[in-house]
Image 1 (cartoon, rainbow, N blue to C red):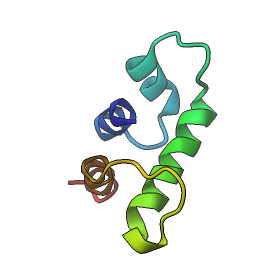
Image 2 (image 1 turned 30 degrees about the vertical axis):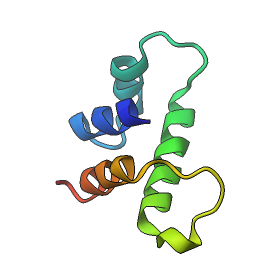
Image 3 (image 1 turned 120 degrees about the vertical axis):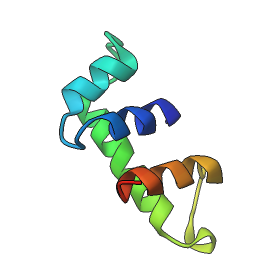
Amino acid sequence: MNVLSVSINSYFRNEWKMIKDEAFGNDSKRTRTDLRDKWKTLVHTATIPAHERRGAVPPEWLLEIVRGVKNGF
């Protein structure tokens, strides 16, 4: 997830093919749609209060990176 956040910061958020190629290369298990959906989930998780989060929650340091990327640092 951290690789995804860093790569998204390097590109516009809609350039999923370039993000996939840079972050994961030819990893056939991941698609551009997978990355986009993961990003949307991370952004949603990062923007809701901690007490409302359910399930496996990414570490707070990662959510801070997501918030920074989302807000353009």
